[in-house]
Amino acid sequence: MKLHYRGKYNLDPATLPTCKHQPNAVKFKEVDSTKELAVIANGIAIALMILLAIPVYLKYKGLLFDYFDEMMVGAMLPLLTMFPHELIHALCFKEDVYLYTNFKQGLLFVVGCETMSKHRFIFMSLLPNIVFGFLPYMISFLGIQYLTLAVLGVIAIGMGAGDYYNVFNALIQMPKGARTYLYQMNSYWYIPEK
Image (tube, rainbow, N blue to C red; front, top):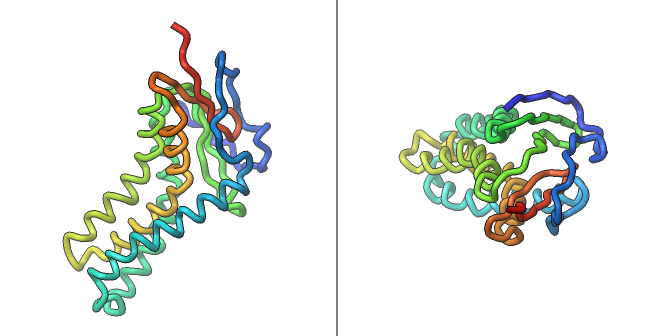
């Protein structure tokens, strides 16, 4: 993998690196714009964070004000994981990967042109969310002193909503043996010719 930092994303998908389309490629049935994706991802994120906060509240309910500082640290840590989150995605690629930012729009993402199997795509999509979200969240239930990890986990899991959207689409749309690749801001799948 070779990482290329491309700077601020100008919201024009035509400026993203692309590869040629594979024979018989099928575009995922997914949203076509970053604005539509933001609406879906934000809805998923809010729902997930509310659901995940309920067990945390039940575990720590009498102590939340005693550990307010820990909660604030946990709420700020996800901002520090944004860049490493994208680097973990990038590490799952074998070829060139391009990193873009647009903090005004709340965007930070990587794009690669290579094709990958359904399983590798799902792994690539979920790995940063496991590392920064699900693991801290699960560890937080080991003891009272882990409230910071609980808050980090809840927020980091919510921040991965766009990744879950991609995984959902891959699971329901890609047939067995299919491979996927990105073209601009959309995913495509195809069955390799033998």
